Length: 249
Ligand code: PEP
Image (cartoon, rainbow, N blue to C red; front, side, top):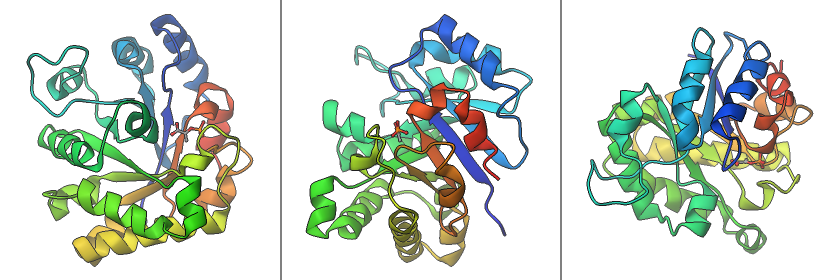
């Protein structure tokens, strides 16, 4: 069965709530399609106005992060219930910026992934190597380790619905997109890894995105690759160009 593409924007720490509404109103007609799932992952404070603004469109609103505890004394964190209560269906977990600046580890990523599934939220699980790791030739080993730990305790049924975003760190926000060969090679290796952890059916069902300076020019050649099921898009998700990325065909 063909996998439906999923194209997600990661707004990062951009857009005030009123700017968020304006951007969604601009992008709504541009991202309309039935060929792909379209998700805007927005800052926590933008979630409610974004959901309101996206009503009646094909845009799903996601979060950029979530904590792995239910509630309590965790100042500044967002609980899974807070997200589901307002209709959030997706959450980015383990973005390399969270790993670098907020000390997230493979283990905390795993806890968050388990908690997201427990609450029926689809995690977009990020993995990716640094430039040094790529130059050392350890990219695939590193990513396999990230994937194996992220999926500890996740059932095959859950894994089938997960989204993995392969994002080489050296390509994020740098304007340096991985070549189609590099992106396809790693996404294929991730699918093999999922097949080893679970089975062929799970490997075939799971959706794997590429992320890292995707733009309207590079999206078509990336998204046509057999193991790339869409993209996680940062900078270009804040511009009308995002419409061209979503309607890449
Ligand atoms: C990202 O934030 O996940 C990302 C890929 O950013 P950019 O597209 O700007 O490289």
